[in-house]
Image (tube, rainbow, N blue to C red):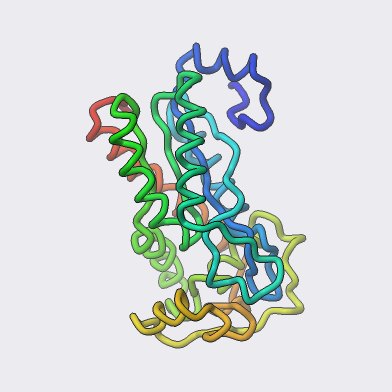
Length: 258
């Protein structure tokens, strides 16, 4: 089995892999932003990178390209350490990824956003790219609600409500990081954040005024309920959700057979 992580490969290895039929490439799109007082700023990137790797392993003849590590995070700029891209900047980066990768023989390009602010720009970029590169199969997991529902369904099975599971540095993401990089988690700083029911008004405040208006510690959910074991389950279920949808899309393209 060849190494599938392009950042750990040289150009000769990548060229040989493409010649052997590894013409599918998976790219995570994370962020560099605050995740409460207890999680590192690369939380979304770590989750996205791990998810992209798992997807590439499960697909036939796929490599994992370097993760895009900064995303659209304006609503977190109140907190130090957050670096944000404008929507058009992220879209331009996605365009450049496709232009670069397609030149070398990749035919199927999959984008996997793991930060809420990246889903819409990714969806818009892919729609434009499909028109520019009709010969390529460019897809993305760009349905944020379905992405979150896949995780919330797991939480419910363990008696954890949506408000506690959260959508930012709450039980879900804290469990995921405990499973992926436990040493980066500051357990002594666990504290519930915003745990009230989410509404359209809540989202309006979040994206127009900033997360700090909802939670002074920048947390949506309750990290005190996080567990390593459940974090592993979250990642596995998220991978299953992603692979299922990717395979369905490729079958619709009538290009790849699984």
